[in-house]
Length: 534
Image (cartoon, rainbow, N blue to C red; front, top):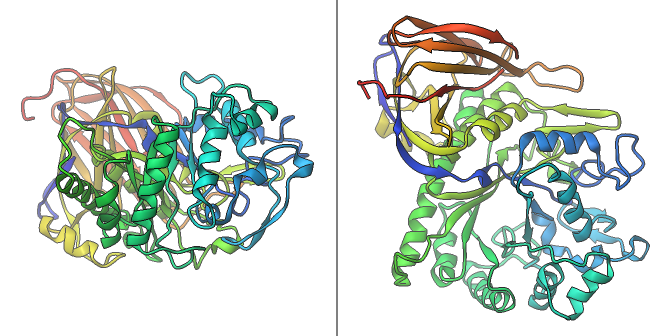
């Protein structure tokens, strides 16, 4: 949780970090991915047989290496809107016998060359060398699909008995069950773009019946309810009858604006959406008289990103070209998830490869878009417990996208130019992320809560907010500095953000430079005794 106090522009801003005040555990699942049969995400993305960069299974080795570097804990599959007309049985068994089908979500042809078993094998390869496997998260077809079809898919994936679909999995070469625990009850069934769009009342009834049957087959399943944005009447309508049966409630939001500052601040809408959805979950629990001893469902933000569908239409593959402004927006998206970690059990950036993605492929290599770097930093360093922060500084009061964000932040005097989150991990490292949204202002900032020890400073920046990365030319990258600080000396360092430089000055502390490499969006420091002013 981060609080904000507006001060006059001429005063020195400050960031106070209370490392001793652990607020909530950050679930690593917030750094999840998403792979849909859409554009070049699967075919030509993770799966590209015949390409010299692919292994014997057709998996792109450069993509595998990059995704391992992100340390993704969970991947959602196979969609997305794709799910509404996808029949999983088409994608199992000998590939030469699999039917090609018209695909109605993105108006393509689905060859079914890549299906359930290929995806699970891909995850096993991706998980090599990890202590825990990359978890699969499957989305059921609640459009043209049936309950029988859903039950059969769960039986195929998780069945251990001598039954038809479990034996079919064995026949296809997979003796042991996949033990898939996360299953979504449809995707965006509220949307007019969906095949078999439903009303909230109809979906609520259908989800309840499916949940009961699925849990009879496998009581260990963690079911995710199809919410809307967390700000919609739909969310409460579907939660009320289903609250007993779900582990998470799914919401989706994409942010965008053609202007830099509204674009960077647009993810703040997700903060209110999470808080709103959490309150609706509590209302549903109260109505159902659920005792406090029963775990509270969390929020599954299983589609989020910067995306303008007019700029990058889904039917054309949605291959966004991301700028530094978009990278700062992704930084704020991730700050929101860390700040709201009490309520968020999973989040999945849409998507992991090529489709509105931080990672792009070509026939001869990959490129890491600007948005790759905040994801990399957060996944690597922003783990542990969210800790208390307080920012004192100047604020932005201009236009927002959507406009209602302005009324929400007005109570704090506007949106802080410095968007902040902080965590402390198991080893006592404090990681602080500061996103400077301003193109014009650099801030010399007092950092309170600093203690003696090692320091790593990372920066993500570029020449201006419009620059983008392409293969072989990285305009936005990562810079890293390391050092040590001592309480009895003076400390001063700069962090480049956006188009300017941001200076932090700690009280009576100095940085002793010990090394310099490449970038980041944050700051890490070893915790010790918290300073007296905190």
